[in-house]
Each structure stands twice: as structure tokens, then as C-alpha cells.
Length: 173
Image 1 (cartoon, helix red, strand yellow):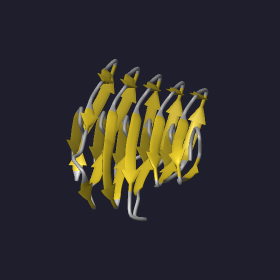
Image 2 (cartoon, helix red, strand yellow; image 1 turned 60 degrees about the vertical axis):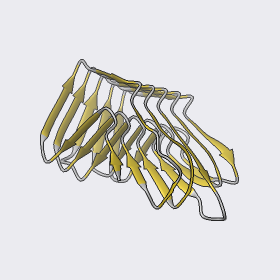
Image 3 (cartoon, one colour; image 1 turned 180 degrees about the vertical axis):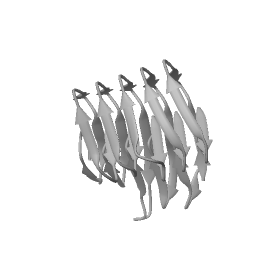
Image 4 (cartoon, one colour; image 1 turned 60 degrees about the horizontal axis):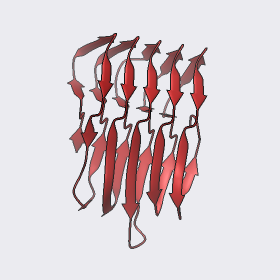
């Protein structure tokens, strides 16, 4: 797999406060069976806190392939302790993919993907996109694979765009 274009944290403690994480990318070559996670931030089996940050314009994908999966262009949180994200903006992060021959690409969480209990407090999730053809798209703003609690946060203009797709959750899934 290809992990963490901007920040990669595994088996560690990562505290982001007042950070700007932008214009990072994971741009694959055409491939089969690859997995791409967290162009901006990737955290695995760690203790993570994000406060007063901007995670913006991080990009994954734009390749043709079979059985390719993209998770969280802005941020991917996997197998971590429960996470709270406070006063943080996820803006303009996107994943792009193109499937072919009936075996497509799967894109999850343009802004943020989490498989652990997640709380968003005073956050803005704006203009994050999943765009593809012959793909499955889920949660262009936020994809939550566990409990999601949202307090005083805004979701706006998050889009799943494409043709011959199956998709769910414009703001959060």
C-alpha cells in the first residue's frame, strides 16, 4: 500500500495543533490491486489529536486500474484510539479513479476516512470530492466506519461525481 503523502504515523502519538497540511499527494501509476491511504495524514494504531488545523488540497489517484482502493484523501485514521478533531477545516481534498473491464475502483472519504469512533467539534468540511468512472464512491466529505459524533460543524459542497458509479453519502456516510 501507499500511505501518508504528508504525514505518516504508526504505533505512535501524533498531536497536530495549529498545522496546515496541504497540497500533498499520492499519485499512482496504473496498477491492479493497490491500496492508497491518507494523502494528507495517515495514522495507524496511534493516539491522534487534531486541533485548529487546515487539511486542504490533498489529492490521491487519477490512475486507471482494477481493484484499486483509495481511503481519505485529506486524512485516514485506521485502528487508532477514539479520535476527537476540533476547530479543523477539511477543504478541497479529492480522490480520482477510473475502473475498467467491469472491475472498478473504490473511493472512500474525500475529506476524511475513519474506522474508529470519531468526534468532530467545530469543524468545517467543504468542497471535498470523489470523482471517478466505473467506481464505488462513499462519503466524499467524511466516511465513518464506526461511531461518528458531530457537534457544531458544517458540511457543504462535498460531491461524488462520475459515471457508471454506485455511491452514498454526500456530506458523511
